[in-house]
Length: 431
View (cartoon, rainbow, N blue to C red):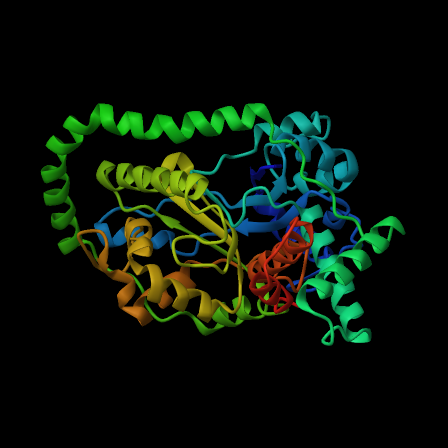
C-alpha cells in the first residue's frame, strides 16, 4: 500500500507585487475556475502521483472581527499558498515538482519577500512547507495510478457488455467470460491493473506508534484530565454564553465570485480561513480537537467516510501565524449547498467542535449542541470565511469518491478466486 501525504508551501506576498502575481496565476487557467493542463508554469498533469492541487492567495476578509472583543485588528500579511495531496512522501513529490517546474515556481515565488533568485529552490520549498494539524484522506492507499487503471477497466468492460449480451449465460459463466476478456486486454497491453506496492516499513511503524501512543498518553494523563474536566466545562459555558456571533449576510459580490469558480464538474474545492477566539483556552481546545480529528481520520475514518460524510476526497486543517488562525481546505463531491447540508444533517456536532473555536461562529452549547443547527447563520459564516481559489487541479475530473469505490469493487470482483451467484449478481449491478 502506498500511503498519501500532503504539502502546503506558504510564503508572504510582497504587497507591491500582489496584482502582478494574481495576473500571473490567471495564466494557468483556461478561464477562472478551469485549469489549463498545458500551462507553462506548473503542469500539474505531468505528475502521476498528484491527486489534487491548488494555488490560492490567503487574504482573510474577517480580520476586523477581533474588534468585537474590544481588541485591535491585526494586520496579517497576505500569503501565497500552494497545496497538494500526493501518493508517497511529500518530500519526494516536491523534489519532482522542482525538477519539472522549477522555472515556473521561481517566477511565482519572485513575488514573495522571502525568496531570492539565487536560492536553492528545493531547500527553500521544503523550508516553507507547513504541516497540517489534521489531515483526512478518503481512502488511504488508493493511488492516482490505481484510480486511472480501475476507471479504464470499468469503461472497457461496460463497452464490452454493450456489444455482447451475456444474459443467456449463467452467472458463473458471465463472470468467466468477463475475466477472459479482461485477461486478453491485459495481455494486449490495452489494460493495466498494477499490483499495490509494499507498505513502507517506516510509515507502518510510525502509524502503529501513533495508533498505540495516543491512547497510552490519554491513559497516563486520565487522572489529570478527570480533575480538569469540571473546570474546563465551567469555563466553556462561560465563554459560550458571552462569545459574540459575527455572521452577517454574505456580500453578493463575494458570493458571486466564489460561485464563478464552482460546479464546472462534479467535484469542487473549498478554502476558508479565520481567526481563533482570543485566549489560551480556545487555542488549546482547538489543538486538542484537531489532534483528535487527525487520529480518527488516520486510524478509523480511512475507508471512504469521515464519520457519516462520504463526499470528501481530501481535507486538511492548518494552523497559521503561531496558532492564531486556521485554514481549512477540502476537495468534495457535489455542490457547496449539498456539501454544507450533508454536514449539518449528519455531523453538525463535528462542525461545532471544530469551528465554534473560531471568532463569530453561531453560538453553541457544551461545544457540540446548537451552532451549525442554526442553518442559515452557519452558512453565512462559512461562505463569508471562504476564499476564492486562483488555481485548482483535479487528477480525475468527473470521478467522485463513490465512483472510485465502485471501480475498486469491480476490480476486486475480477480478482477474487471465487464468488457465489448472489455476489456475482451484486457485482454485475456495478456496471
